[in-house]
Image (cartoon, rainbow, N blue to C red; front, side, top):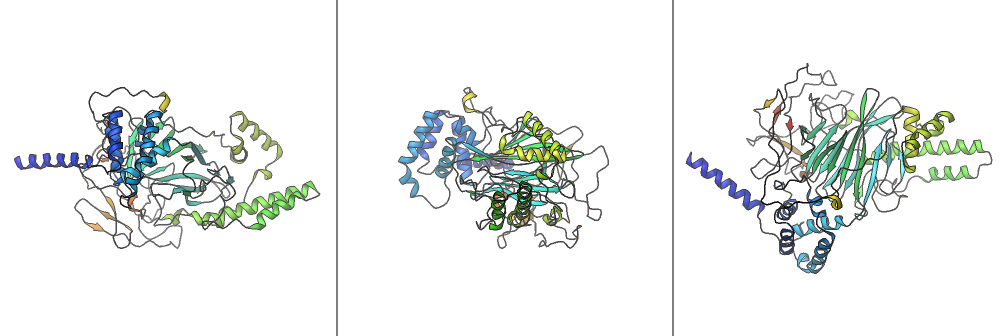
Length: 538
């Protein structure tokens, strides 16, 4: 017994040593400045920045707010942030002499720069229609899983799964994200397991929000605002998941917020954020779209008959949509090694892919004039902005989808937030409680660990036994026979190891449904084991 107590105390000391690791020479004066600003919040912020640089889970919050590291930094008065900016300039020589790896100084510099930047937003909504960061708009009537947006720093990625509504229309059925190393998925439909009471999966495990927010291990926060979920990155980016419905099928609109100062650091369907909309439809290798598409549009301007001009415009638009649905879409389809989604055994990303979709490319010029005008009036009444008017008319006229105004992310406002003094640190990770009728599950947690040779994820239990998944392959039929649950190949996206130093969601909960468990979508697919449900704040 005495030996166990000593081991426990030793573990506590290791925890304190982990989060009290010495800052780099360049970051040390910044850390002191943060602690002078607020001895509790500033100390946590400095420790969180050090953890982010080491790609480790951040320490527990010791104050009442649910802020991310970026949001906490934004609460520092502008004058003090300007002083810190000047400190960065003065310390550049010290910082440049450090190692080539990302340091606490580098992380702080990026967060501080974001605090002076304006935001820009990209959207995937309705059929879906897309609006890039640089305000290019287009329809993307496709079926499959795609990179919506990805930062080249490896800390930010959003993927969408588009599923067919009928032969010609598709909707966003799921969203998967890399949030600084945490893999979070939202499933409006086609959940990867038999857990129906929550749409969220964190690193493959179901989670449930009992309050209005949920802490992610690496510093992000999930916030529920009405029916909208705002996902806040520790570095300041946001994604708003707007839960919608069309008939009996649920879908989501996705609004991604990034910083305008991160020029040309993005790729995916929402463009590169370089300030120019003209190249947002280029191929992945930056090859411009085919010239004949532009030529068709130019030809319509010289047509003498207005009816001929309208026909040429309609044909040009359909040709452009075909290019987007085939060539452009293929550039941004995810693979079994790059996907962030969860899958039932026996399915892969190919199960959700249909390259023959759509059968016909629809556009608003094919809508009768009366329906088009009624849809336009409805969209205008609901306050839809001009750059989304075409997509709104399309959805309202063809699918009877209600107009959707771009949502505002649920993030704290620095000018309207008062930080009362915290007399002493107090943990703010809320004691986890089990939902009614549920009990802790006595089963090992699964840790996604990349294979050192191939870079592919392995499944490792707490007893360190590793089972390497079977190599994925393209299924020959709509019901793939091979059993696989691919995870992203990027090590930073995998679940952190379980240790006393890691703040994480609450203990696993084994659900006990009152209704019979629904069958998987494919009758021949073997039924997976039911994962645990974590609830409360992480």
